[in-house]
Length: 219
Image 1 (spheres, rainbow, N blue to C red):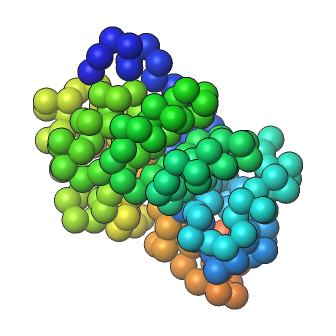
Image 2 (cartoon, rainbow, N blue to C red; image 1 turned 30 degrees about the vertical axis):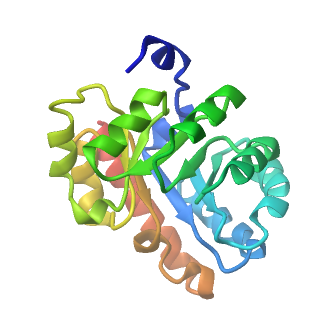
Protein backbone atom coordinates (compact mmCIF):
# COMPACT_ATOMS: atom_id res chain seq x y z
CA UNK A 1 0.00 0.00 0.00
CA UNK A 2 1.41 3.38 -0.90
CA UNK A 3 1.44 6.08 1.71
CA UNK A 4 -0.48 8.34 -0.65
CA UNK A 5 -3.30 5.80 -1.10
CA UNK A 6 -3.54 5.20 2.64
CA UNK A 7 -3.71 8.93 3.29
CA UNK A 8 -6.53 9.38 0.76
CA UNK A 9 -8.58 6.38 1.90
CA UNK A 10 -12.12 7.41 2.82
CA UNK A 11 -13.84 5.84 5.80
CA UNK A 12 -17.08 3.98 5.28
CA UNK A 13 -20.20 5.87 6.41
CA UNK A 14 -20.69 5.68 10.18
CA UNK A 15 -24.19 4.21 9.99
CA UNK A 16 -22.99 1.39 7.76
CA UNK A 17 -20.13 0.54 10.11
CA UNK A 18 -22.33 0.88 13.17
CA UNK A 19 -25.15 -1.31 11.88
CA UNK A 20 -22.86 -3.96 10.33
CA UNK A 21 -25.55 -5.05 7.85
CA UNK A 22 -25.89 -3.81 4.27
CA UNK A 23 -29.04 -4.90 2.44
CA UNK A 24 -28.63 -5.34 -1.32
CA UNK A 25 -31.95 -4.20 -2.76
CA UNK A 26 -32.33 -5.73 -6.20
CA UNK A 27 -35.87 -4.84 -7.24
CA UNK A 28 -37.71 -5.45 -10.48
CA UNK A 29 -38.38 -1.71 -10.78
CA UNK A 30 -37.36 1.35 -8.80
CA UNK A 31 -40.96 2.20 -7.91
CA UNK A 32 -40.95 -0.83 -5.61
CA UNK A 33 -38.15 0.46 -3.37
CA UNK A 34 -40.23 2.56 -0.98
CA UNK A 35 -42.47 -0.09 0.53
CA UNK A 36 -39.51 -2.38 1.19
CA UNK A 37 -37.22 0.36 2.52
CA UNK A 38 -39.96 1.50 4.90
CA UNK A 39 -39.99 -1.95 6.48
CA UNK A 40 -36.20 -2.36 6.49
CA UNK A 41 -35.64 0.92 8.33
CA UNK A 42 -38.43 0.13 10.77
CA UNK A 43 -36.62 -3.14 11.59
CA UNK A 44 -33.34 -1.31 12.25
CA UNK A 45 -31.49 -1.58 8.93
CA UNK A 46 -29.32 1.48 8.41
CA UNK A 47 -27.55 0.78 5.12
CA UNK A 48 -29.06 -0.20 1.77
CA UNK A 49 -27.29 -0.79 -1.55
CA UNK A 50 -29.55 0.11 -4.47
CA UNK A 51 -28.47 -1.88 -7.50
CA UNK A 52 -28.21 -0.58 -11.04
CA UNK A 53 -29.72 -3.82 -12.33
CA UNK A 54 -32.98 -2.29 -11.13
CA UNK A 55 -34.34 -0.08 -13.94
CA UNK A 56 -34.86 3.53 -12.90
CA UNK A 57 -32.55 3.54 -9.87
CA UNK A 58 -30.76 6.74 -10.85
CA UNK A 59 -34.02 8.57 -11.54
CA UNK A 60 -35.46 7.44 -8.22
CA UNK A 61 -32.39 8.07 -6.08
CA UNK A 62 -32.93 11.80 -5.31
CA UNK A 63 -36.40 11.09 -3.90
CA UNK A 64 -35.12 8.12 -1.91
CA UNK A 65 -32.32 10.22 -0.43
CA UNK A 66 -34.82 12.92 0.51
CA UNK A 67 -37.07 10.39 2.22
CA UNK A 68 -34.52 8.08 3.86
CA UNK A 69 -31.16 9.85 3.75
CA UNK A 70 -31.41 11.21 7.29
CA UNK A 71 -32.03 7.74 8.71
CA UNK A 72 -29.92 5.39 6.59
CA UNK A 73 -26.97 5.25 4.22
CA UNK A 74 -28.05 4.68 0.62
CA UNK A 75 -25.34 3.35 -1.66
CA UNK A 76 -25.38 2.56 -5.36
CA UNK A 77 -24.21 -0.91 -6.35
CA UNK A 78 -23.48 -3.02 -9.41
CA UNK A 79 -21.43 -0.13 -10.78
CA UNK A 80 -19.49 -1.48 -13.77
CA UNK A 81 -18.26 1.56 -15.69
CA UNK A 82 -16.94 5.07 -15.08
CA UNK A 83 -20.09 6.78 -16.35
CA UNK A 84 -22.25 4.91 -13.84
CA UNK A 85 -19.82 5.77 -11.08
CA UNK A 86 -19.92 9.45 -11.99
CA UNK A 87 -23.73 9.42 -12.05
CA UNK A 88 -23.84 7.75 -8.64
CA UNK A 89 -21.55 10.43 -7.22
CA UNK A 90 -23.54 13.24 -8.83
CA UNK A 91 -26.81 11.79 -7.55
CA UNK A 92 -25.56 11.89 -3.96
CA UNK A 93 -24.92 8.21 -3.19
CA UNK A 94 -23.45 7.75 0.29
CA UNK A 95 -21.12 5.06 -1.09
CA UNK A 96 -20.64 3.04 -4.26
CA UNK A 97 -20.17 -0.70 -4.71
CA UNK A 98 -18.78 -2.56 -7.70
CA UNK A 99 -18.59 -6.33 -8.26
CA UNK A 100 -15.19 -6.02 -9.94
CA UNK A 101 -11.61 -5.05 -9.12
CA UNK A 102 -10.69 -1.71 -10.70
CA UNK A 103 -8.07 0.59 -9.27
CA UNK A 104 -9.31 3.24 -11.71
CA UNK A 105 -12.75 3.11 -10.06
CA UNK A 106 -11.12 3.47 -6.65
CA UNK A 107 -9.22 6.56 -7.78
CA UNK A 108 -12.32 8.10 -9.38
CA UNK A 109 -14.53 7.62 -6.35
CA UNK A 110 -11.88 8.74 -3.88
CA UNK A 111 -11.15 11.90 -5.83
CA UNK A 112 -14.90 12.62 -5.81
CA UNK A 113 -15.03 12.15 -2.04
CA UNK A 114 -17.30 9.10 -2.04
CA UNK A 115 -16.37 5.81 -0.28
CA UNK A 116 -16.04 2.82 -2.60
CA UNK A 117 -16.29 -0.92 -1.95
CA UNK A 118 -14.89 -2.86 -4.92
CA UNK A 119 -15.43 -6.59 -5.29
CA UNK A 120 -12.95 -9.40 -5.67
CA UNK A 121 -12.28 -12.94 -4.55
CA UNK A 122 -8.59 -13.74 -4.79
CA UNK A 123 -5.97 -12.26 -2.47
CA UNK A 124 -4.44 -10.47 -5.46
CA UNK A 125 -7.73 -8.82 -6.43
CA UNK A 126 -8.65 -7.79 -2.91
CA UNK A 127 -5.22 -6.45 -2.04
CA UNK A 128 -5.03 -4.51 -5.32
CA UNK A 129 -8.18 -2.58 -4.43
CA UNK A 130 -7.13 -2.11 -0.81
CA UNK A 131 -3.68 -0.88 -1.84
CA UNK A 132 -5.29 1.61 -4.22
CA UNK A 133 -7.20 3.19 -1.32
CA UNK A 134 -10.59 1.46 -1.29
CA UNK A 135 -12.71 2.17 1.77
CA UNK A 136 -13.34 -1.57 2.10
CA UNK A 137 -13.20 -4.59 -0.18
CA UNK A 138 -16.12 -6.85 -1.01
CA UNK A 139 -15.39 -10.57 -0.86
CA UNK A 140 -17.58 -11.77 -3.73
CA UNK A 141 -19.05 -14.30 -4.10
CA UNK A 142 -18.54 -14.99 -0.41
CA UNK A 143 -20.50 -18.24 -0.42
CA UNK A 144 -17.73 -19.86 -2.45
CA UNK A 145 -15.16 -19.47 0.33
CA UNK A 146 -16.85 -19.07 3.73
CA UNK A 147 -15.93 -17.07 6.85
CA UNK A 148 -12.62 -18.87 7.45
CA UNK A 149 -11.33 -17.26 4.25
CA UNK A 150 -11.32 -13.85 5.90
CA UNK A 151 -9.29 -15.21 8.80
CA UNK A 152 -6.76 -16.52 6.30
CA UNK A 153 -6.63 -13.17 4.49
CA UNK A 154 -5.94 -11.36 7.72
CA UNK A 155 -2.68 -13.28 8.06
CA UNK A 156 -0.85 -11.41 5.28
CA UNK A 157 -3.25 -8.43 5.28
CA UNK A 158 -4.04 -7.71 8.95
CA UNK A 159 -5.44 -4.22 8.33
CA UNK A 160 -7.73 -4.98 5.39
CA UNK A 161 -11.37 -3.92 5.84
CA UNK A 162 -13.61 -6.51 4.24
CA UNK A 163 -17.30 -7.15 3.66
CA UNK A 164 -18.62 -10.50 2.39
CA UNK A 165 -21.35 -10.46 -0.25
CA UNK A 166 -23.14 -13.20 -2.15
CA UNK A 167 -24.38 -16.25 -0.30
CA UNK A 168 -24.41 -14.68 3.17
CA UNK A 169 -27.38 -15.97 5.14
CA UNK A 170 -28.47 -15.62 8.76
CA UNK A 171 -26.45 -18.64 9.88
CA UNK A 172 -23.19 -17.43 8.32
CA UNK A 173 -23.59 -13.71 9.04
CA UNK A 174 -22.47 -14.04 12.64
CA UNK A 175 -19.48 -16.16 11.64
CA UNK A 176 -18.37 -13.59 9.08
CA UNK A 177 -18.64 -10.80 11.63
CA UNK A 178 -16.79 -12.85 14.22
CA UNK A 179 -14.05 -13.44 11.63
CA UNK A 180 -13.54 -9.69 11.38
CA UNK A 181 -15.87 -8.46 8.64
CA UNK A 182 -16.74 -4.79 9.01
CA UNK A 183 -20.29 -5.65 7.88
CA UNK A 184 -22.15 -8.31 5.95
CA UNK A 185 -23.83 -7.62 2.61
CA UNK A 186 -27.10 -9.53 2.35
CA UNK A 187 -29.63 -9.88 -0.44
CA UNK A 188 -31.97 -12.80 -1.06
CA UNK A 189 -31.72 -14.50 2.35
CA UNK A 190 -33.08 -11.32 3.95
CA UNK A 191 -35.32 -9.89 1.24
CA UNK A 192 -36.90 -13.16 0.18
CA UNK A 193 -39.92 -12.44 -2.03
CA UNK A 194 -40.51 -8.92 -0.71
CA UNK A 195 -40.00 -7.31 -4.11
CA UNK A 196 -42.40 -9.81 -5.68
CA UNK A 197 -45.36 -9.03 -3.50
CA UNK A 198 -44.30 -11.14 -0.52
CA UNK A 199 -45.36 -10.71 3.09
CA UNK A 200 -43.81 -7.49 4.45
CA UNK A 201 -44.39 -8.64 8.01
CA UNK A 202 -42.14 -11.63 7.31
CA UNK A 203 -39.59 -9.26 5.77
CA UNK A 204 -39.61 -7.22 8.97
CA UNK A 205 -38.93 -10.35 11.02
CA UNK A 206 -36.04 -11.43 8.79
CA UNK A 207 -34.48 -7.97 8.86
CA UNK A 208 -34.81 -7.78 12.64
CA UNK A 209 -33.10 -11.17 12.95
CA UNK A 210 -30.07 -9.94 10.97
CA UNK A 211 -29.97 -6.77 13.04
CA UNK A 212 -29.96 -8.85 16.20
CA UNK A 213 -27.10 -11.05 14.99
CA UNK A 214 -25.04 -7.98 14.10
CA UNK A 215 -25.71 -6.43 17.50
CA UNK A 216 -24.75 -9.65 19.27
CA UNK A 217 -21.41 -9.85 17.47
CA UNK A 218 -20.73 -6.18 18.22
CA UNK A 219 -21.29 -6.71 21.96
